[in-house]
Amino acid sequence: MNSEQCVDYILSKDRNERNKAFAFLYSSCFPKVKSLVLQNKGTRDEAEDLFQDTVAILYQNILHKKFDNRSTISTYAFGIAKNLWLMELRKRKIQISTLIVDKQEEEIETEVNVSLLHRVLDHLDGNCRKLLISFYFHQNSMKDLTAQFGLSSEQVARTKKLRCMKKLRDIVKRYHLDQNQFKL
Image 1 (tube, rainbow, N blue to C red):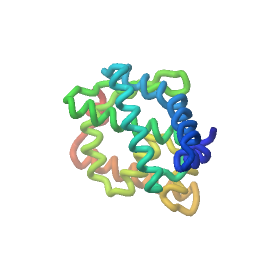
Image 2: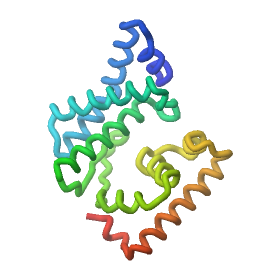
Image 3: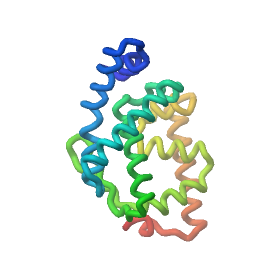
Image 4: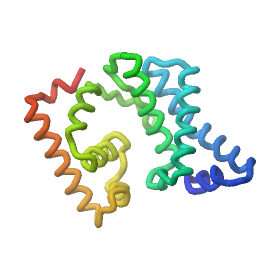
C-alpha cells in the first residue's frame, strides 16, 4: 500500500478499508517507534501508548488536510512519534544525552544538547526554523523542500537553506556559543 492509498483508506467510510490502512500503519511504523522508545529510556507499553497517540495525531492531520503526501505516511508518522517522545522525555526531566534512531538497519547516534539547540532555533524566524527542521531532522530532500515551502526550484531551496544556516551560525556567534556546547 502506498501513502496516497493509505490516506484514501483512512478517509473511507468503509470500515474494512480503514482497518487495512491502520494495519498498514502498524506494520510499517510501529517497529520503528518501538525501537526508538526502547533505545531511549522507554518501555514497550510506552511505545504502544506513543504509537496510539501518533496515529491519533496523524488521523487528525489527515482530516484537517495537514498531511500533504510530500513524504511517505510512514516517515510522517515516525516524525510525529519522535517529537512526541522527545516532549515526553523533556516533561519527565530526563536528560537527553543521546537520541538513538534506527535508520535503514543502521544505528545512528546523535549526541546533541537538544535543549540548547531548541533555544537557538527559537531565535530564527518561523520559515527558517521550519526549513532547517524539515531538512535536518525530517531529512526531506531539496525537492520536498521546494514543494513544501512553495519555492520555484531546488536551487532556490538550497540557497534558502544556506541563508538560514548562516542566520543560525550568526545567532550562535552572537551568544558566544561554541559548537562543543551542543555536544554532550
